[in-house]
Length: 291
Image 1: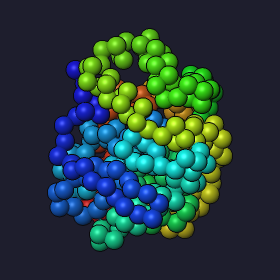
Image 2 (image 1 turned 90 degrees about the vertical axis):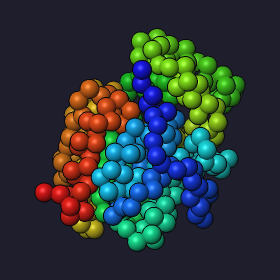
Image 3 (image 1 turned 120 degrees about the horizontal axis):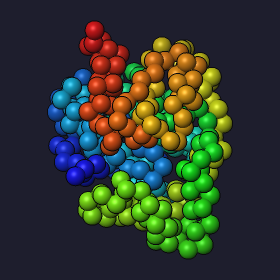
Image 4 (image 1 turned 120 degrees about the vertical axis):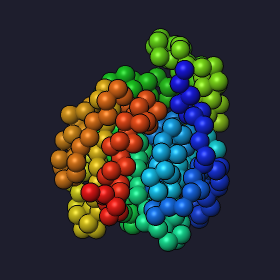
């Protein structure tokens, strides 16, 4: 049985308050020498990082996982454009400032769509000590079943609402053995999370996934100017942005590329121990605590 997003952890549920909105977060409380800000992907939430929160804390880092505006427990505006990467990047840049005000460096990790948002935050001037892109890509989501699902879901969401859109999503998920074997509690969480999210947010992020330009060169330039290290990580069976595509992005960034075995698009829930084996040595080295 996998608990995934319901994995027990020691983090506290808090709200981070800035000029943009109230941001729901999970934050570990042990003493730390740096904060790691964790940004989820499309239809995701802070709970996507539940399996790695305590592992990050055990390494002497404070994990702060958030719901982006419009996701699950974070409210968001009734404006689809507010959920494009460039707009959400401004929100994340402010979150970086809030965490940096505590006196420690801030590391930034973005998963999937959250990687596009994290990139936008760096381009917006976020002052970070390192950037990790997990299962993300250089530009819009390429053709494939995930992009097809966006096209299928948009009219349902616009015409019939969240409940109807999720019902179809659940019918599609039911085709896959991995979904059918999930605990009922976890299925219930996925449903609650989706139907609690903003329809404007889901539509705006879907638009971003289908329109985001290639900004890798601009990001590489900014990271070089600021002397910020980066890392690109993918699950070995990623079915969103392909492994070769992510490897090429890493090369263009001048960043190391790492594969997580026994994982697809979400190593944070599929193989959290393997993901931590990749992330923690890199993060500690960036902070001067590694070999």
